[in-house]
Every structure is written in structure tokens, then in C-alpha cells.
Image 1 (cartoon, helix red, strand yellow):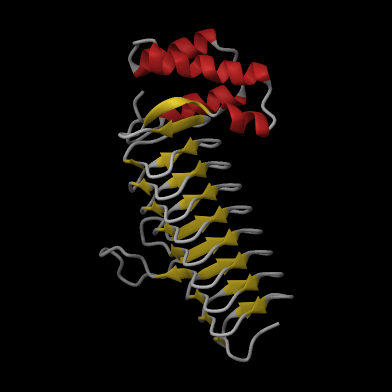
Image 2 (cartoon, one colour; image 1 turned 60 degrees about the vertical axis):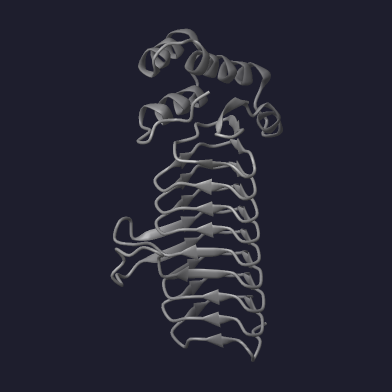
Length: 256
């Protein structure tokens, strides 16, 4: 399963049933779990921590040092969960002293040319489109869809179950369950099709829609709008998630 043309450092730890293609490079201080497929010309560098059942396509580079001038060689990691598809030329940098690790969860698809910068956290079940660039210390919650050629500013957060239009760029947070698009990027309604596909009931979708109608269309300031949501919308974990997301946003949320 391991090509004689691949290089694996003797201190690297490789699990069971791992396939490593020719001209791939696996450095020291690397831990790789079981049932991973590492195609030709993949580079996995010091600090990589990889789970089970992932596929790495040619040209991908995992755990390269951060593109951050504050990085001074500290010991950090890039952590990849289970059952991810990491397509061609994807780069995942390891962390800095800020958070010490970069994390990509499980069951994600990172398409060709995606960049995940230092200290980023990508959740589970996400789809990140071709050539999208995720800056340092960003957060993407579970089940988000970020289309192709999107530029995400450092420190931003993307909520779960969103759909972000291709070619977008943003420097504020994108709250959960919505569609974000146009130029400049704005709230463009809730992600009805995506929510139905994920099994959300019509009643819950309506409650989410009503919450965002108050947040974005009532004319109230943000604090007053959130209080009105609490008073008028039946509470659920999804509505609580929206409220928590907006209240804890450090950069503010995108406008309507």
C-alpha cells in the first residue's frame, strides 16, 4: 500500500490500511490514522494529526508553517478529522501561538485550491468550493456551504447550514441558516432548500424565517430585534443558536 517512491520519516506514525502514492512526502511528528488514501505528490508536514478514512488528492499540502510573520517556530498542529475529501492543491497550514492548532473536522469536502490558514476551525459536513481562501483564525460551523472563489477575512465566523454565493468576499460574520450573496455581500433570505434537504420541518423553517424578518427588516436596532425574537418566536435550539451567534459576534453580522 506504500509506494517505494514515497518518503516517510521513520518517526511518523502510520495507521492500518493506509495507501501512500509515489512522490508523496510524510515528515516527522506526523500521526495518520487508519484507512487513509494519500495519492501521489501529497505533502504532509510536521505537526499533522490525521484521523481515519480521508482521501488526499495530488498536490495537497497539510501542516505547512503558517503564513504569519508573528510565527516564531512554536510547536503547533494541523488536525484533520475523519472521512474528508481533500482535493487537488488544497493547503491547510498549522496553528500559531494564538490557538496552537488549525482544525478541519470530519465529513468535509475541500475542493481544488482551497486554502485553510493558521488557527482556522472548520466544522463537520461542510463543502468549501474551488479556490476559496479562508484566512487566519476564522470559524466555519457545521454543514455550511461556501461556494467557489470566496474570500473570507480573518477572525470571521460563518454559521451552520448557510449557503454563500461564489465569488463573494466578506469581513463580517454570516449568521446560520441563511443565503449570503450579491456584491457587496448581504443577507439574501434563508437557505430554504438546504434546510429542507437536512430534514428541517416547515414549521421550524417558518420560525427561522420569522426570526430573520425581525432581525433584518423590522427597523429595530440589533439588541431590540433580538429581544423581540425572544418574545415572539417559539424557542428552539435553532432559534437559540441564532441569538447566541449574533450576540457573541465580534465583527458584527452582514447587512441586508
